Image (cartoon, rainbow, N blue to C red):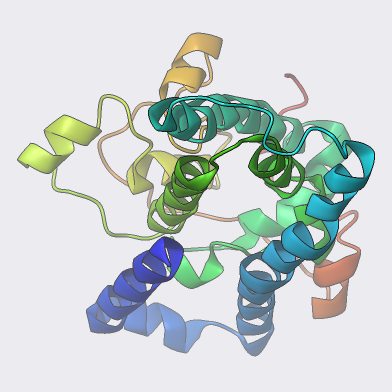
Length: 253
């Protein structure tokens, strides 16, 4: 429900934004198909797989461990919102390594921060994202997983916001409170920059990038986003190897 609220609010704001309406009119049909397919896959198919398949795998492999972990609700929330966020930092960073970049690069073909394009990806990329596997595991093991689920939902909502153009003004109280620790849309826009920016891999927190030296500071959005692809739609959806791209990807970890 929380994710749906985030998406609905951002989509409504997008509809009222003149710049975004122009961007939508300029998007190719293939881009719309990529974006809507990605949203449907990550928003419907993946949650269904988590409930109907992955959760049952843990039930099969660990039949005597369901609900075995008793922790305070706040700790359950922190487990999801903080610890899993750190693991995702490395998961995302690995996608920018030579081995996995070929399947992740489709996500970087977006040319403007766009909530609809949040889930643009090769469809089977979702199977390599830790959320698919780790969330059902903890939901199965935790005696009371509600607060864990709340943390995961908030992370997903922030992911939608992070891919939008809606960011607090630099002189606002809201910005002063959030900017020191939270990845904002302008921070993530530099991750999508056409320039050679190897950084800002975090989802929720800037801390991980700062600790590992991959943080790229900026108080405004980059003006040029995205890499180019000459491949047909089906190639980007299912087999995005050898796409032409700039030197954005760096081969180091």
